[in-house]
Structure formats: structure tokens, C-alpha cells
Image (cartoon, rainbow, N blue to C red):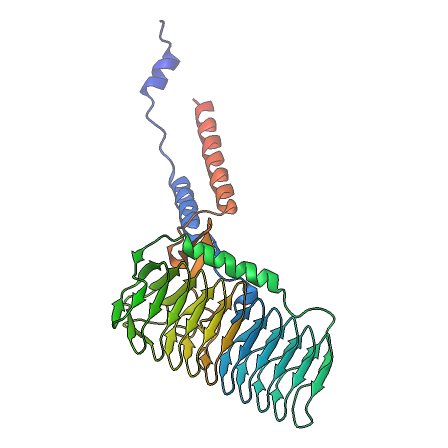
Length: 356
């Protein structure tokens, strides 16, 4: 084959070096893509974010009980005498607060609404049905609703989706069906066919002085704790989270100290004098996907000044993933920038060859 002078020139030509401006463009594109994070769906939807109690059927709190956060009920909602609610009381059915009870938010009912003697509602009392106010009660006005105050079917679906996503995290460490002695557990995923504890034992959750740790308990059927059972969180900070995921019902004995958010497919029952707290500033809470939530006299749900559920998890492809573990991926706008950059490189190379 005859080699022309032009072909000799091409053979001798050194590979094209990218100018500094082009290299800078590629670096900028790479950095932009790395800084954009994939967004999973929050484990709990926005509508449940401020709730501490959700029940698809009915919700009731005992006398002298305290709940920090909203109570949302798919049917009737009842607060006992001298009970306190730092949030809104929302029910699809009738709602009643007993004598000397206090609600710091609104009381909205899809049925009738009744406010007992010396009870107070800092917000508005409104209902689709009749509103009955005791002469000695205090409210910030009363009115008539034009629609139900909550979409409880959507709430129930969110709880169900959260339970399924947590279950998809896998078996983790298997636990026995009965906890009879004081026990210490380090962060991780735990599973059991069902789980019950004897009265008076202490379960210690040790965060090992690391941030963003979690304990997820996936229980196929029921969760039952004995009276005066205590959960203690040590070597942990406000970024940690504890979630109890029960495929059946959950029943907490009287005078206990419980930590974590409880999700149950069936009912949730909390004994008299028992506290259920979240971690750090989170309230934790009680959530039943298909049934009721009931607390005994003097029970306490959520700590003073707490806010939200605070799970620390998102749902990605049907599985619960810690929010901090979601890998960085470029958004569509970043891909567009990358394509534009590559097109610019191609154009520059084409012009370079055209000048040869």
C-alpha cells in the first residue's frame, strides 16, 4: 500500500491532550454527580410524621396518661380523665375527652365531639356530627367539618409498607422466643418467631459510642413484655433509632420503661404506668395497621418536647435502608451536564482533525 505524506503525518501525530479547561469541566461534572444523593421514600409518610399514636379502628388513653404527638384514629377516640395530649386529636368516628383532660392542638372528629367538665382544647373543636362542650370547658372555638379529618386508609397503607420494608432487611440475629434474663444487644437487625419477656428484666441496647446506629426487631407474630420490664439505651446519641416490627399484636406490661417505635399489624396495648419513648428528640410511638391502640392509666407516650417519629430509614426498592447508607448517584440534570460535556469534547476533537 502506497503511504502518502498525509498518512505519515497522521502516524507520527501524538494522541490529543485535553486542554486544562476541558479537564476542569470533567472534574466539575464528576463532583456535581457525586454530591447528589439518591432519594428513597421515607419509612413513614409526611402525614404520619407528627403522630405518636395511629389506630385503624379505635384509640383510647387511660386517666392521667400523657401523649406527645398527634393521635389519629380510624374510628372513635377517647382520652381519659386528666389525660394530656400535646398535639392534635383526629378521629374518623366520635371523639371524647374526659374531665380535666387537655389537648394542646385541635380536636377534629368525623362523628360527634364531646369535651368533658373542666377539660381544655387549645385549638379548635370541629366535627361532622354534634359538638358538645361542658359549661366549664375551654376551647378556641367550635365548628362544623366539611370532610373527614384524616385519610386513615392511606395511613394504614404507610404502616403496612414500613413493616414490609423492615421485614425485607433480612433475618439478622435470631432471638429466642422468651427473654428471661437481663440481656445486652448491640446495633443490628434481630428476628424472632414471637418474643416475650419475663417481668422485671432489663434489656440494654449498647450503641458502642457510634452515631447513626439502629436496632430493628422483626417479630413474626406477637411481642409481649412482662410487668416492670425495662429497656435502657447506653453509649448512644440522638442519631440512633430503635424499631419494633410485630407481625401480630404487641402488649406491654404495667410499670415498664420501653424505648422505640412500635409497629404492629394487630393491636397495641400499653399497661398502666408504662412509658414508651423514642431516641433523642424523637417521640417514637404506637402504630397499628389493622386494629386498635390502648394505653392504661398513667401511661406516657413520647417524652417532653419530642417531635416526630425519627426512624432514620428510607425505603429503597421495597427494603428499609438507613438514610445515611443510600449511595450517591447523579440526578437526570447531572447526566445532561455529562452528555453536554462529552459532546463538547467530541466537537473539539472534530475541529482539531479538520485542521490537519
